[in-house]
Image (cartoon, helix red, strand yellow):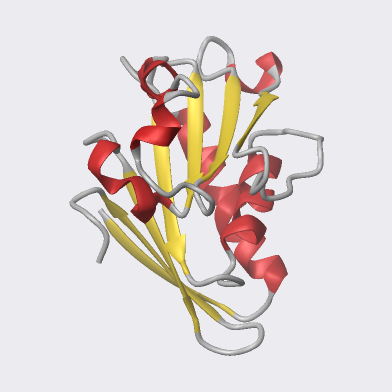
Length: 158
């Protein structure tokens, strides 16, 4: 799978995230977590995308980048997901210097739990420990408001 989007404003970037999340909720039950890795420049649209993604998961809390706490967890409404994923885990690896640091937060358990949907900002910083089933999303800064978003099955950042 490889999809490309050109967004002209933050609302469109959020909408792409929302649509992807809704697609995830319709998928059949999995054996492990659904994991999304996001990469791109600072200000490239990763957190904006995840705000829309959370909206698609029917999460009411405000989504901010967890740069200083590294990880935040949000409950997904059981009305929207039936017996599918129940927790959205938002991880920000901007401050991670070595991939092993993220393991102390229970990363292996988080990505193994089929009730989790996991989004990892700055995922390229921990590429050596990312799961094989990762969906890779790359953000390219084109102008003040324009972004190019490329979504693909994992085979490493490109």
